Image (tube, rainbow, N blue to C red):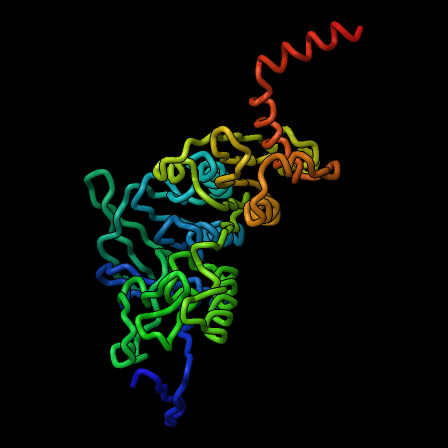
Length: 362
């Protein structure tokens, strides 16, 4: 039924319901993977001994975070990535900083590769992979899979409830988080492309507001397309991002000005020995409107919220520049990036005017 749920053998009816079943770690269809056995970000914490040799399939955020962690524990770590670099969604120079740091810590990257088969040889697990037109093999003790998430939709009876879904993407929900059954909403990883804990929390608030206070014309409804979503990859250094990347902004037809300032020129970062990284701000040309930002650094995840708050409040670089930042702090890097915008817009005409002004007032 479209308004009934069965729990513990009992059938309950509802006026409103929400599907918040989340996702689980996806596994690639590699022959022999299931038989050989593998770890995910959910099961890796059940290990009681450190694997001497670890293969990580996937160079995305989860793969990189755990690869770096196990390298620091002392494992010999190899990361398999089909593309030519890690963290392909991030700016290339941002990902390069992380890749370089991981390499110095002993992580080995196998780029432009495809794992085609896995087999057991006693206690060993053998990775057979293609690279540069030839097939090679790597022997490891454990395999960690980090290639994304798959929706938890099995056994929910979504067809009977009239809820449309995609087995790979999840439940279909609109910007108000309504499913194709008007009584049922969805929130979190099960229906949204950005699969982060903090985003699921924000969506839960939208569901509560929209489901408990319905209106025939959706007046006062909260919307997911109004969310300004930051995220962070917790490697060292961290990569944090909010809003649009430069390429995304250009695809939307927006003219972009980009300003980047290195942490190596921020006193506190140098004193802390954490000068690897930068702050980058994308601004709509001719305005101070912030379109997006990327911060790379030891505390990038802590710093990105300043930019997020400005974007959420509809404020731009003028507000940021008018905000006094305590010295010495690493967050100065954001203000210094914004200051480059001010210098760029200090036109030649304004310079001539000030020069004449100073000459006249002498």
